[in-house]
Amino acid sequence: MLSEIALYGAFETGLIYGLVAFGIYLSFRVLHFPDLTVDGSFPLGAAVAAVLIIGGYNPWLATGAAIIAGMAAGAVTAILNVRLNILNLLASILTMIALYSVNLRIMGRPNIALLTEETVLTPWYDIGLEFHQVPVLLFFIFAIVMLFLLWRFMQSETGLAMRATGANPRMARAQGIATGWMIILGIALSNGLVALAGALFAQSQGAADVTMGVGVIVVGLASLIGGEAVLAPRSVLRALVACILGAILYRIAIALALNADFIGLKTQDLNLVTAVLVTLAIVLPNARHSIKNFLSRSRT
Image (cartoon, rainbow, N blue to C red):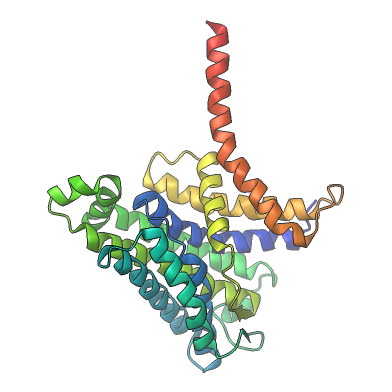
């Protein structure tokens, strides 16, 4: 069983990766754009926030700058695709590779420690909660605020135009929608959310590292698909709630698997457990549908 601290840790990390799942929902589900930039924009957000924080800037300002940097990275990917006609997957890979060097340039070294610096979490430690409860509360507020803003945006005229662009680009263009700009805006917003997650992750873990983005796309997809398997995304609001739910359940499942002594898994098995959970999240909904069809045929 999980200890209380391990459970709070799973909630903390799950809420951060819920923001990543929001970004992947925008790119994969709304725009149908396979965007691997997130593996670079996650550490980009962490790098920008960390450098500004150790430079003496307000951590909230540093977090805002991280969002802008992530949006710029996403815009580069989209422009490579829309304006230079590079295949979307290849464009995102090119940006992701370039961001590794950019992140090293920003930090000046492979990692930066933030353990003694003031972060967005620092003032919250004085409100009387336990040390491990503070990040959960703050990141829950972040997740709810982002969920509400995204939900309202997707209902706006621009949000509807973006959804039409992803659903049927030809029809959207026929209706006068500038689909190219919608893709640029959507991928920029997606990576801005991922960079925000990276900035918060660095501040909660006390360090930014240039390799911290490896596998973020897989974790985000696992959260998205797992959440949709639990809560059917019949509306935008349900889809966004499913992102947070999936991210938290995914982290709890990872924590449970790694703490189950009778299975014998260790920390180095994290990628193996991730691959198994993603596979189950993809296969189980289809298997459930097949079982229902089999049972209905057997009754007739």
